[in-house]
Image 1 (cartoon, rainbow, N blue to C red):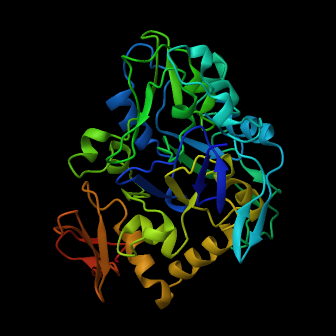
Image 2 (cartoon, one colour):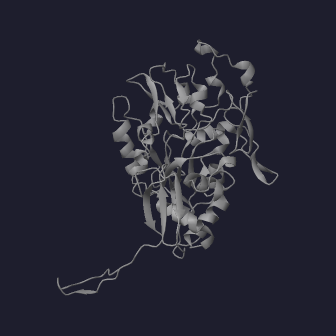
Length: 401
C-alpha cells in the first residue's frame, strides 16, 4: 500500500498517492473562546464567493453551534459512525492514533487496486469512506443554534464552575485545505488539485464532470455541488488575497478577532517566530479538527475552556486538556506564556498576513513576509478615568473608565 506520514496521527497511514507536500502550506488558527457567532465571517464569504445561481445553499464559511448544530446536517456524526473504533495510544511518550482513517477503513490496497487512466470507472473515489449528503441536508445552516447541552442550572450554581454544567460553543468552519485532501484523492477525473506553492486545494471547474465524488469523499462536508453550473465548488482559501500577502475575507471581517492566517510547517521544520507554528507546535494550544479522519487538516482550533473535555477529546484529539491548561494560564497572566498572550492579542489586528511576531515589554508586534511591521497592539490596554461630573454638559457619568 502507498504510505504517507501523518504527523497529527503520529504514524504512517495508507493513502492513494505518494506524499508530496507543497513548498509552503496555507494554515490558520481559530480561537473558539472568542467566537460570538455573529456570522460576519459567513456573510463576508457569501457576498464575495457564493452569491451566484446554484450557490444558494452554499456556505463555504459557516458557524455551527456544538454539540447539536451541523452544516450539512449530521456531517460529523455520519462520518464518525462510519469509522467505528477511534482510540489513541502512546508510543515513546507520543500520542499515536490506533484506529483507521477514511483511507484505511475499507482495507483498500491503493497500489494494486488503483488504476489511473481516462476511464472514471477505474478510479478509486468510492474506496475512500464517506457519504454524499442529501439535498435537504444543505437547507439548515443554523440548525441547533444556541441550543445548550448538559444539566439544568440550579439557583445555587456558580457561574465559575469548571466545567459549567450547561454548555455550548461555536465552531466556525471553512475548507481545511488538507495535506492529504480526500476530495482530491477521490476525484475520478483529477479535477481537484493542491497548489504546490501554497497548499491551497482548488477545483478546476473546466475539468470537473460533476460526478460528485469530492462531495462524497470530503468528511468535513466542504465540497458542494452546484446544480445550476453542474460542477462541484468549494472554498478557495481567498487565493487572490493570499497571493498579495493579505488574509482571507472571513479573517479580515471577523469581529471577534478569533482568526490568524499564515503558513504551517511540519513539526520538524517548525519556526517559533512563525505565529501558526508557535500556536500549533511550540505551545500546542491549537489543535486540528477530527485528526482521526486522516486528512491532516490545516485549520487549527484553540479549544473552548467551558466544555467537558471528553467531548473535546473526540473532536480535537488527546492534546485537549494540556491545550486548555496552557490557554488558561496565559489568560491569567502567566509570565511563562506571555508570548502566547501577546500573539492572541495580535489576532485579527491587520488585513495583512503576519508571518513573524515578537512580544516586547509594552506591545506585541507583527511582521509581514518582507519584515515590515503590519501590526502593533499593547500588552495592556491603556485606561483613562473621567470625572464623575461633567461641568460643561452639566451631567453625571455612570461609566468613568
